[in-house]
Length: 461
Image (cartoon, rainbow, N blue to C red; front, side, top):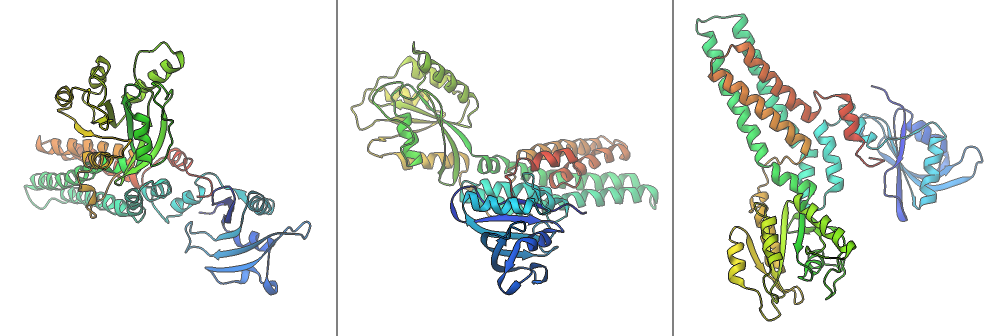
Protein backbone atom coordinates (compact mmCIF):
# COMPACT_ATOMS: atom_id res chain seq x y z
CA UNK A 1 0.00 0.00 0.00
CA UNK A 2 1.50 3.35 -1.10
CA UNK A 3 0.73 6.75 0.38
CA UNK A 4 1.94 10.27 -0.27
CA UNK A 5 4.54 11.77 2.06
CA UNK A 6 3.20 13.51 5.17
CA UNK A 7 4.78 15.96 7.62
CA UNK A 8 3.77 17.37 10.99
CA UNK A 9 5.17 18.87 14.18
CA UNK A 10 5.34 16.01 16.70
CA UNK A 11 6.10 18.01 19.83
CA UNK A 12 3.82 20.44 21.72
CA UNK A 13 3.72 24.00 20.40
CA UNK A 14 5.54 26.57 22.50
CA UNK A 15 9.04 27.44 23.61
CA UNK A 16 11.39 24.59 24.50
CA UNK A 17 14.89 23.25 23.99
CA UNK A 18 14.00 21.02 21.05
CA UNK A 19 11.07 20.53 18.68
CA UNK A 20 10.62 17.64 16.25
CA UNK A 21 9.17 17.75 12.75
CA UNK A 22 8.37 14.28 11.42
CA UNK A 23 8.13 13.07 7.81
CA UNK A 24 6.80 9.69 6.65
CA UNK A 25 6.42 8.29 3.14
CA UNK A 26 8.41 7.04 0.17
CA UNK A 27 9.67 10.58 -0.58
CA UNK A 28 10.51 11.50 3.04
CA UNK A 29 14.28 11.15 2.63
CA UNK A 30 14.32 12.83 -0.79
CA UNK A 31 12.31 15.84 0.43
CA UNK A 32 14.49 16.28 3.53
CA UNK A 33 17.60 15.90 1.37
CA UNK A 34 16.51 18.89 -0.79
CA UNK A 35 16.69 21.12 2.27
CA UNK A 36 19.53 19.59 4.28
CA UNK A 37 23.15 20.75 4.09
CA UNK A 38 25.43 18.48 6.08
CA UNK A 39 29.08 18.73 7.02
CA UNK A 40 31.27 18.07 3.97
CA UNK A 41 28.24 18.03 1.66
CA UNK A 42 26.73 14.91 3.26
CA UNK A 43 23.54 13.71 1.46
CA UNK A 44 20.73 12.06 3.40
CA UNK A 45 20.01 9.76 0.44
CA UNK A 46 23.33 8.00 0.97
CA UNK A 47 23.46 7.67 4.76
CA UNK A 48 22.77 4.44 6.66
CA UNK A 49 19.38 3.79 8.21
CA UNK A 50 18.75 4.71 11.84
CA UNK A 51 21.50 7.32 11.99
CA UNK A 52 21.41 10.99 13.04
CA UNK A 53 23.21 13.86 11.30
CA UNK A 54 24.10 17.45 12.15
CA UNK A 55 23.62 20.21 9.61
CA UNK A 56 21.45 23.10 8.43
CA UNK A 57 18.09 23.44 6.73
CA UNK A 58 18.47 25.70 3.69
CA UNK A 59 15.65 27.45 1.84
CA UNK A 60 16.21 26.29 -1.79
CA UNK A 61 14.66 29.49 -3.23
CA UNK A 62 16.84 31.99 -1.35
CA UNK A 63 19.80 29.85 -0.33
CA UNK A 64 19.47 31.24 3.21
CA UNK A 65 19.93 29.16 6.35
CA UNK A 66 16.52 28.49 7.92
CA UNK A 67 17.59 26.42 10.95
CA UNK A 68 20.40 24.48 12.59
CA UNK A 69 19.23 20.89 12.98
CA UNK A 70 19.92 17.26 13.82
CA UNK A 71 18.23 14.92 11.32
CA UNK A 72 17.39 11.25 12.01
CA UNK A 73 16.98 8.98 8.99
CA UNK A 74 15.06 5.70 9.38
CA UNK A 75 14.35 3.55 6.35
CA UNK A 76 11.27 1.33 6.14
CA UNK A 77 10.06 -1.21 6.96
CA UNK A 78 11.85 -1.01 10.34
CA UNK A 79 10.02 2.15 11.42
CA UNK A 80 6.81 3.02 13.27
CA UNK A 81 4.84 3.49 10.04
CA UNK A 82 6.83 0.83 8.07
CA UNK A 83 7.63 3.69 5.64
CA UNK A 84 10.76 5.82 5.34
CA UNK A 85 10.73 8.23 8.29
CA UNK A 86 12.77 11.39 8.83
CA UNK A 87 12.72 13.32 12.10
CA UNK A 88 14.16 16.85 12.10
CA UNK A 89 15.24 18.09 15.54
CA UNK A 90 15.28 21.89 15.58
CA UNK A 91 15.14 24.63 18.19
CA UNK A 92 11.89 24.59 20.13
CA UNK A 93 10.41 27.96 19.21
CA UNK A 94 7.19 28.71 17.34
CA UNK A 95 8.94 30.52 14.48
CA UNK A 96 11.77 28.02 13.99
CA UNK A 97 9.66 24.86 13.98
CA UNK A 98 6.99 26.37 11.71
CA UNK A 99 9.67 27.58 9.30
CA UNK A 100 11.01 24.03 8.92
CA UNK A 101 7.51 22.60 8.48
CA UNK A 102 6.57 25.17 5.83
CA UNK A 103 9.72 24.38 3.83
CA UNK A 104 8.84 20.68 3.87
CA UNK A 105 5.27 21.41 2.74
CA UNK A 106 6.44 23.62 -0.15
CA UNK A 107 8.90 20.98 -1.30
CA UNK A 108 6.63 17.97 -1.75
CA UNK A 109 5.20 16.93 1.61
CA UNK A 110 1.56 17.18 2.73
CA UNK A 111 0.42 18.24 6.21
CA UNK A 112 -0.54 15.11 8.15
CA UNK A 113 -4.06 14.67 9.45
CA UNK A 114 -4.57 14.07 13.21
CA UNK A 115 -3.31 10.59 14.06
CA UNK A 116 -2.20 9.85 10.49
CA UNK A 117 1.23 8.47 11.45
CA UNK A 118 -0.42 5.93 13.77
CA UNK A 119 -3.13 5.26 11.17
CA UNK A 120 -0.44 4.37 8.64
CA UNK A 121 1.20 2.07 11.18
CA UNK A 122 -2.17 0.27 11.45
CA UNK A 123 -2.92 0.20 7.72
CA UNK A 124 0.60 -1.03 6.93
CA UNK A 125 0.24 -3.90 9.44
CA UNK A 126 2.73 -2.57 11.98
CA UNK A 127 0.13 -2.59 14.79
CA UNK A 128 -3.51 -3.61 15.13
CA UNK A 129 -6.39 -1.28 16.00
CA UNK A 130 -6.35 -1.92 19.75
CA UNK A 131 -2.61 -1.19 19.85
CA UNK A 132 -3.16 2.02 17.86
CA UNK A 133 -5.80 3.18 20.34
CA UNK A 134 -3.35 2.39 23.17
CA UNK A 135 -0.92 4.96 21.71
CA UNK A 136 -3.36 7.76 22.55
CA UNK A 137 -4.09 6.19 25.95
CA UNK A 138 -0.35 6.30 26.65
CA UNK A 139 -0.17 9.99 25.74
CA UNK A 140 -3.20 10.83 27.89
CA UNK A 141 -2.27 8.63 30.89
CA UNK A 142 -2.49 10.57 34.17
CA UNK A 143 -1.10 7.95 36.57
CA UNK A 144 1.61 5.28 36.52
CA UNK A 145 -1.06 2.57 36.57
CA UNK A 146 -2.85 4.09 33.58
CA UNK A 147 0.46 4.28 31.73
CA UNK A 148 1.30 0.64 32.50
CA UNK A 149 -2.15 -0.38 31.28
CA UNK A 150 -1.63 1.48 27.99
CA UNK A 151 1.88 0.00 27.59
CA UNK A 152 0.52 -3.52 28.05
CA UNK A 153 -2.14 -2.94 25.40
CA UNK A 154 0.37 -1.28 23.06
CA UNK A 155 2.65 -4.30 23.36
CA UNK A 156 -0.26 -6.48 22.22
CA UNK A 157 -1.39 -8.16 25.44
CA UNK A 158 -5.09 -7.70 24.62
CA UNK A 159 -4.52 -8.40 20.91
CA UNK A 160 -2.90 -11.77 21.62
CA UNK A 161 -5.80 -12.89 23.79
CA UNK A 162 -8.41 -11.75 21.25
CA UNK A 163 -6.55 -13.49 18.40
CA UNK A 164 -6.35 -16.68 20.48
CA UNK A 165 -10.12 -16.65 21.08
CA UNK A 166 -10.84 -15.98 17.40
CA UNK A 167 -8.57 -18.87 16.43
CA UNK A 168 -10.41 -21.19 18.84
CA UNK A 169 -13.73 -20.23 17.22
CA UNK A 170 -12.31 -20.62 13.71
CA UNK A 171 -10.90 -24.08 14.43
CA UNK A 172 -14.18 -25.15 16.03
CA UNK A 173 -16.15 -24.03 12.98
CA UNK A 174 -13.70 -25.85 10.69
CA UNK A 175 -13.94 -29.10 12.70
CA UNK A 176 -17.72 -28.96 12.67
CA UNK A 177 -17.73 -28.42 8.90
CA UNK A 178 -15.44 -31.43 8.42
CA UNK A 179 -17.66 -33.58 10.64
CA UNK A 180 -20.71 -32.58 8.65
CA UNK A 181 -19.15 -32.97 5.19
CA UNK A 182 -17.23 -36.18 5.91
CA UNK A 183 -19.17 -38.14 8.53
CA UNK A 184 -17.34 -41.28 9.67
CA UNK A 185 -19.55 -42.09 12.64
CA UNK A 186 -23.26 -42.30 13.26
CA UNK A 187 -23.05 -39.96 16.24
CA UNK A 188 -21.38 -37.14 14.27
CA UNK A 189 -24.12 -34.64 15.23
CA UNK A 190 -23.70 -35.45 18.92
CA UNK A 191 -19.91 -35.04 18.64
CA UNK A 192 -20.33 -31.67 16.91
CA UNK A 193 -22.73 -30.41 19.59
CA UNK A 194 -20.36 -31.55 22.34
CA UNK A 195 -17.43 -29.74 20.69
CA UNK A 196 -19.47 -26.57 20.17
CA UNK A 197 -20.57 -26.58 23.81
CA UNK A 198 -17.04 -27.13 25.12
CA UNK A 199 -15.37 -24.46 22.97
CA UNK A 200 -18.26 -22.03 23.34
CA UNK A 201 -18.09 -22.29 27.13
CA UNK A 202 -14.33 -21.68 27.05
CA UNK A 203 -14.69 -18.55 24.89
CA UNK A 204 -17.51 -17.27 27.10
CA UNK A 205 -15.42 -17.69 30.28
CA UNK A 206 -12.49 -15.79 28.74
CA UNK A 207 -14.76 -12.91 27.66
CA UNK A 208 -16.30 -12.77 31.14
CA UNK A 209 -12.77 -12.57 32.66
CA UNK A 210 -11.97 -9.60 30.42
CA UNK A 211 -15.21 -7.83 31.28
CA UNK A 212 -14.52 -8.26 35.01
CA UNK A 213 -11.52 -5.96 34.59
CA UNK A 214 -13.42 -3.41 32.51
CA UNK A 215 -14.61 -1.16 35.34
CA UNK A 216 -11.12 -0.79 36.79
CA UNK A 217 -9.57 -0.47 33.33
CA UNK A 218 -12.03 2.21 32.25
CA UNK A 219 -11.40 4.16 35.47
CA UNK A 220 -7.63 4.03 34.89
CA UNK A 221 -8.06 5.17 31.30
CA UNK A 222 -10.69 7.89 31.63
CA UNK A 223 -10.48 8.89 35.28
CA UNK A 224 -13.12 8.59 37.96
CA UNK A 225 -15.70 11.36 37.71
CA UNK A 226 -15.75 12.56 41.33
CA UNK A 227 -18.12 15.26 42.53
CA UNK A 228 -17.70 17.17 45.80
CA UNK A 229 -21.10 18.20 47.15
CA UNK A 230 -22.41 19.80 50.31
CA UNK A 231 -24.02 22.92 51.68
CA UNK A 232 -22.18 26.23 51.30
CA UNK A 233 -19.16 26.80 53.54
CA UNK A 234 -18.63 23.16 54.64
CA UNK A 235 -15.13 23.03 53.11
CA UNK A 236 -15.68 21.70 49.57
CA UNK A 237 -13.13 24.02 47.97
CA UNK A 238 -10.65 23.32 50.77
CA UNK A 239 -11.06 19.61 50.03
CA UNK A 240 -10.35 20.19 46.34
CA UNK A 241 -7.22 22.16 47.23
CA UNK A 242 -6.07 19.43 49.65
CA UNK A 243 -6.42 16.65 47.05
CA UNK A 244 -4.81 18.70 44.28
CA UNK A 245 -2.10 19.97 46.68
CA UNK A 246 -2.55 23.45 45.23
CA UNK A 247 -4.82 26.45 45.85
CA UNK A 248 -7.01 26.00 42.79
CA UNK A 249 -10.31 27.07 44.35
CA UNK A 250 -11.02 30.30 46.22
CA UNK A 251 -11.65 29.64 49.92
CA UNK A 252 -13.43 32.18 52.12
CA UNK A 253 -15.75 32.18 55.14
CA UNK A 254 -18.50 33.64 52.94
CA UNK A 255 -21.13 31.04 51.96
CA UNK A 256 -21.69 30.74 48.19
CA UNK A 257 -18.13 31.73 47.15
CA UNK A 258 -17.99 28.95 44.52
CA UNK A 259 -20.49 29.91 41.80
CA UNK A 260 -19.63 27.34 39.11
CA UNK A 261 -18.28 23.81 38.71
CA UNK A 262 -14.47 23.71 39.01
CA UNK A 263 -12.74 20.74 37.32
CA UNK A 264 -9.28 19.33 38.12
CA UNK A 265 -7.46 16.03 37.52
CA UNK A 266 -5.71 14.48 40.51
CA UNK A 267 -3.90 11.21 41.21
CA UNK A 268 -5.09 9.60 44.45
CA UNK A 269 -3.14 6.41 45.31
CA UNK A 270 -2.96 5.52 41.61
CA UNK A 271 -6.63 6.32 40.99
CA UNK A 272 -7.06 9.15 38.46
CA UNK A 273 -9.88 11.41 39.63
CA UNK A 274 -11.65 13.95 37.45
CA UNK A 275 -12.47 16.09 40.45
CA UNK A 276 -15.44 18.47 40.29
CA UNK A 277 -15.94 21.08 43.02
CA UNK A 278 -19.53 22.29 42.89
CA UNK A 279 -21.42 25.31 44.12
CA UNK A 280 -22.95 24.70 47.55
CA UNK A 281 -26.43 23.24 47.10
CA UNK A 282 -29.03 25.41 48.84
CA UNK A 283 -32.06 27.53 48.05
CA UNK A 284 -30.90 31.03 47.10
CA UNK A 285 -32.26 34.26 45.62
CA UNK A 286 -28.89 35.10 44.00
CA UNK A 287 -29.46 34.40 40.28
CA UNK A 288 -25.78 33.61 39.56
CA UNK A 289 -25.47 31.27 42.55
CA UNK A 290 -28.76 29.63 41.56
CA UNK A 291 -27.33 28.77 38.11
CA UNK A 292 -24.27 27.26 39.85
CA UNK A 293 -26.49 25.19 42.14
CA UNK A 294 -28.42 23.86 39.13
CA UNK A 295 -25.16 22.87 37.43
CA UNK A 296 -24.12 21.12 40.64
CA UNK A 297 -27.29 19.03 40.59
CA UNK A 298 -26.66 18.14 36.94
CA UNK A 299 -23.08 16.86 37.41
CA UNK A 300 -24.28 14.92 40.46
CA UNK A 301 -26.31 12.66 38.16
CA UNK A 302 -23.29 11.84 35.97
CA UNK A 303 -20.75 11.13 38.76
CA UNK A 304 -18.96 7.83 39.46
CA UNK A 305 -18.13 8.87 43.04
CA UNK A 306 -19.66 11.42 45.40
CA UNK A 307 -17.70 13.11 48.19
CA UNK A 308 -20.47 14.42 50.45
CA UNK A 309 -19.07 17.03 52.84
CA UNK A 310 -20.74 17.96 56.17
CA UNK A 311 -19.80 20.60 58.74
CA UNK A 312 -18.80 19.22 62.19
CA UNK A 313 -19.31 22.69 63.68
CA UNK A 314 -22.85 23.15 62.37
CA UNK A 315 -26.14 21.44 63.11
CA UNK A 316 -27.42 18.75 60.75
CA UNK A 317 -30.02 20.42 58.51
CA UNK A 318 -32.84 19.46 56.20
CA UNK A 319 -30.60 20.39 53.26
CA UNK A 320 -28.00 17.84 54.47
CA UNK A 321 -30.72 15.21 54.69
CA UNK A 322 -31.87 16.03 51.15
CA UNK A 323 -28.32 15.55 49.89
CA UNK A 324 -28.26 12.02 51.33
CA UNK A 325 -31.52 11.31 49.49
CA UNK A 326 -30.10 12.74 46.25
CA UNK A 327 -27.07 10.39 46.29
CA UNK A 328 -28.96 7.27 47.37
CA UNK A 329 -27.74 4.18 45.50
CA UNK A 330 -24.49 5.83 44.38
CA UNK A 331 -20.89 5.29 45.49
CA UNK A 332 -20.50 7.85 48.27
CA UNK A 333 -17.85 8.77 50.83
CA UNK A 334 -19.22 10.97 53.63
CA UNK A 335 -16.72 13.52 54.94
CA UNK A 336 -17.38 15.33 58.23
CA UNK A 337 -15.06 18.34 58.05
CA UNK A 338 -13.94 21.08 60.51
CA UNK A 339 -13.34 18.71 63.44
CA UNK A 340 -10.94 21.33 64.81
CA UNK A 341 -14.02 23.36 65.85
CA UNK A 342 -16.51 22.57 68.64
CA UNK A 343 -19.00 19.86 67.72
CA UNK A 344 -22.51 20.94 66.76
CA UNK A 345 -23.53 18.16 64.37
CA UNK A 346 -25.45 15.10 65.56
CA UNK A 347 -22.95 12.33 64.73
CA UNK A 348 -25.48 9.60 65.61
CA UNK A 349 -27.70 10.87 62.82
CA UNK A 350 -24.72 11.06 60.46
CA UNK A 351 -23.76 7.44 61.25
CA UNK A 352 -27.35 6.35 60.72
CA UNK A 353 -27.58 7.97 57.27
CA UNK A 354 -24.05 6.83 56.34
CA UNK A 355 -24.58 3.14 57.15
CA UNK A 356 -24.20 2.20 53.43
CA UNK A 357 -21.31 4.60 52.84
CA UNK A 358 -17.75 5.05 54.03
CA UNK A 359 -17.37 7.80 56.65
CA UNK A 360 -14.24 9.90 57.17
CA UNK A 361 -13.67 12.80 59.59
CA UNK A 362 -11.30 15.59 58.61
CA UNK A 363 -9.89 18.92 59.62
CA UNK A 364 -8.66 20.30 56.31
CA UNK A 365 -7.41 23.43 58.07
CA UNK A 366 -5.02 21.28 60.12
CA UNK A 367 -4.51 18.73 57.30
CA UNK A 368 -6.00 15.87 59.33
CA UNK A 369 -7.91 12.95 57.78
CA UNK A 370 -6.76 13.47 54.16
CA UNK A 371 -4.69 10.24 54.15
CA UNK A 372 -7.69 8.27 55.42
CA UNK A 373 -9.85 9.82 52.70
CA UNK A 374 -7.37 8.93 49.95
CA UNK A 375 -7.19 5.35 51.25
CA UNK A 376 -11.01 5.15 51.28
CA UNK A 377 -11.17 6.30 47.65
CA UNK A 378 -8.54 3.78 46.49
CA UNK A 379 -10.02 0.84 48.41
CA UNK A 380 -13.59 1.61 47.32
CA UNK A 381 -12.81 0.97 43.67
CA UNK A 382 -9.73 -1.20 43.51
CA UNK A 383 -9.58 -3.14 46.76
CA UNK A 384 -5.97 -4.04 46.00
CA UNK A 385 -6.78 -6.23 42.99
CA UNK A 386 -5.37 -3.70 40.56
CA UNK A 387 -1.91 -4.75 41.68
CA UNK A 388 -2.28 -8.11 39.92
CA UNK A 389 0.22 -7.73 37.10
CA UNK A 390 -0.74 -10.75 35.00
CA UNK A 391 -4.31 -9.63 34.23
CA UNK A 392 -5.26 -8.18 30.86
CA UNK A 393 -7.26 -5.04 31.59
CA UNK A 394 -9.90 -3.76 29.17
CA UNK A 395 -10.22 0.02 29.40
CA UNK A 396 -11.57 1.26 26.07
CA UNK A 397 -15.32 1.94 25.91
CA UNK A 398 -15.47 0.63 22.33
CA UNK A 399 -13.76 -2.62 23.34
CA UNK A 400 -16.08 -3.08 26.32
CA UNK A 401 -19.17 -2.61 24.13
CA UNK A 402 -17.90 -5.13 21.57
CA UNK A 403 -17.03 -7.66 24.29
CA UNK A 404 -20.54 -7.35 25.72
CA UNK A 405 -22.00 -7.98 22.27
CA UNK A 406 -19.66 -10.94 21.75
CA UNK A 407 -20.67 -12.35 25.15
CA UNK A 408 -24.34 -12.11 24.21
CA UNK A 409 -23.64 -13.82 20.88
CA UNK A 410 -21.66 -16.72 22.39
CA UNK A 411 -24.33 -17.19 25.07
CA UNK A 412 -26.92 -17.46 22.28
CA UNK A 413 -24.77 -20.12 20.62
CA UNK A 414 -24.39 -22.11 23.86
CA UNK A 415 -28.11 -21.89 24.56
CA UNK A 416 -28.86 -23.08 21.02
CA UNK A 417 -26.55 -26.09 21.44
CA UNK A 418 -28.19 -27.00 24.75
CA UNK A 419 -31.63 -26.80 23.08
CA UNK A 420 -30.50 -29.14 20.29
CA UNK A 421 -30.74 -26.48 17.59
CA UNK A 422 -29.38 -27.52 14.15
CA UNK A 423 -25.65 -26.91 13.84
CA UNK A 424 -25.89 -24.52 10.89
CA UNK A 425 -27.98 -22.14 13.06
CA UNK A 426 -25.46 -22.37 15.91
CA UNK A 427 -22.66 -21.53 13.48
CA UNK A 428 -24.29 -18.17 12.74
CA UNK A 429 -23.91 -17.05 16.37
CA UNK A 430 -20.36 -18.40 16.55
CA UNK A 431 -19.39 -16.58 13.37
CA UNK A 432 -20.94 -13.38 14.74
CA UNK A 433 -18.84 -13.73 17.92
CA UNK A 434 -15.73 -14.17 15.77
CA UNK A 435 -16.56 -11.00 13.79
CA UNK A 436 -17.25 -8.90 16.90
CA UNK A 437 -13.93 -9.89 18.45
CA UNK A 438 -12.27 -9.02 15.15
CA UNK A 439 -13.62 -5.48 15.36
CA UNK A 440 -11.60 -4.93 18.56
CA UNK A 441 -8.29 -5.48 16.78
CA UNK A 442 -9.43 -4.10 13.42
CA UNK A 443 -9.58 -7.34 11.45
CA UNK A 444 -13.22 -6.71 10.59
CA UNK A 445 -14.01 -3.01 10.84
CA UNK A 446 -15.51 -0.33 8.57
CA UNK A 447 -13.28 2.35 7.05
CA UNK A 448 -15.53 5.09 8.48
CA UNK A 449 -14.86 3.83 12.02
CA UNK A 450 -11.11 3.82 11.39
CA UNK A 451 -11.27 7.45 10.18
CA UNK A 452 -13.33 8.44 13.22
CA UNK A 453 -10.96 6.78 15.70
CA UNK A 454 -7.79 8.31 14.29
CA UNK A 455 -9.35 11.77 13.99
CA UNK A 456 -9.31 11.89 17.82
CA UNK A 457 -5.50 11.67 17.89
CA UNK A 458 -3.26 14.70 18.27
CA UNK A 459 -1.57 16.13 15.19
CA UNK A 460 1.87 14.64 14.55
CA UNK A 461 1.16 11.26 16.18
